[in-house]
Image (cartoon, rainbow, N blue to C red):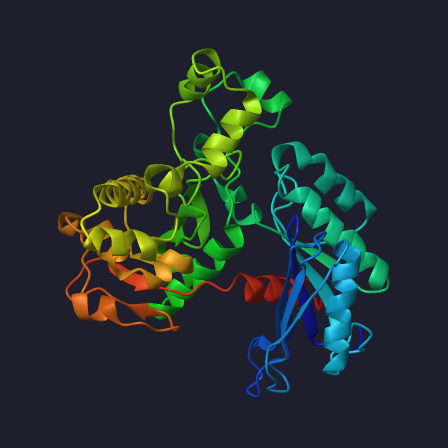
Amino acid sequence: MTATATRVLVLNSGSSSVKYQLLDMKPDSAGGSAAGTRLAVGLVERIGEETSRLAHTPLATGGDKRETEGPIADHEAALKAVAAELSADGLGLDSPQLAAIGHRVVHGGLKFTAPTVIDDAVLKEIERLVPVAPLHNPANITGIRTAQALRPDLPQVAVFDTAFHTTMPEHAARYAIDVATADAHRIRRYGFHGTSHAYVSRKTAELLGKDPSEVNVIVLHLGNGASASAVAGGRCVDTSMGLTPLEGLVMGTRSGDIDPAVTFHLKRVAGMSEDDVDVLLNKKSGLVGLCGDNDMREIRRRIDEGDERARLAFDIYIHRLKKYIGAYTAVLGRVDAVAFTAGVGENAAPVRAAAVAGLEEMGLAVDADLNAVRSGEPRLISPEYSRVAVAVVPTDEELEIAQQTYALVNA
């Protein structure tokens, strides 16, 4: 890496998509921390289909969003198309200003507790974890290999969704099953959305004017996928997702917590296969299973029109949220803030209000006027008298990945 190399390309490779951002991590003029100025953002979707689409926005030049459609055969073709778009803006992958490529990797198991420069051994370990992340790690691996082929001389860094949660104590991470069986098959609670939980818990401390080591935060990452975490002094001590992202809160299409015997019952009584049950719990449950919609805006519209199914789905969603707020208050002992983030958490004021309604004895309250404000900035929505701050903190996983990547290669 040259002395002038301050740019990081962040790649989030899905099974049929690639999200990307190019950021400049040059320290600010005051010599402070890396600012993370976005130079370009984009998305390639429907990879492998005839109707593939690439949307690219060159923020550095102030240009308009460019969209192209046509077949993109695979991830290699997708990244080459991304490279061409960046080159058209003078931001090509061959630039000496590019310091590294940071990759979102969903599952790092217990071995990877921090951002890691990818070599053959690291890649082999990520592959070994495919059985516990069959939907995510294979796509992440494909993105890594493709990027390595395009820039074999450049550091490739893996930033793991699970890493932030590796600080959980054993009594929180272990399931109450036979230890030998659990260890033999790596069955334990790993947690996910860790990059978001790390970023939001730190930003919440900043919002309170305190060091993260001084603050206990409950983070509620509420999107189509949803998870909660209990963060004590900057370290995760519990989180709602487990071996997979299926455990925990009610989500857009996932059930969240469920009696394990339901799966046996469905196989024995309903004659469903393992794959059938998998699809049911991951893709046909949660909000969509309860009312047919997983868009919170549509659910709220239906509630306003008197739709009882939508109301029940919302009530179940909120009930689960309250249970986790209460549980994590008990785990932490002292809570300084509850932070809402991600698509629903940042934008659905009725969800935030309902989640803390009735919890005044726990020190929680929401100011209706503050809660109604729409803003892209971190903000408090609790009244001044509240013992526990309630915050809305927009997450920025790409910036977190870029910061961790740049810090590692620049160390």
